[in-house]
Image (cartoon, rainbow, N blue to C red):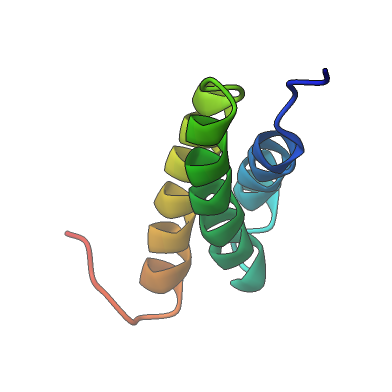
Length: 77
């Protein structure tokens, strides 16, 4: 049985793409959503891809904050 979590792999890729495309807000937002789905699905298949989803979620969330800061929705001093 294939125990790969393709959601986690996709989420990690979106997290890495968020580094380069943080100015396009949809990339980090979709990364956050996909990684949350991957974490939930990973629990059902023996924690497959949990670390990938977690790293992707952290990257996506970090660069979503960068996006919000860049366009003035929040200020970080």
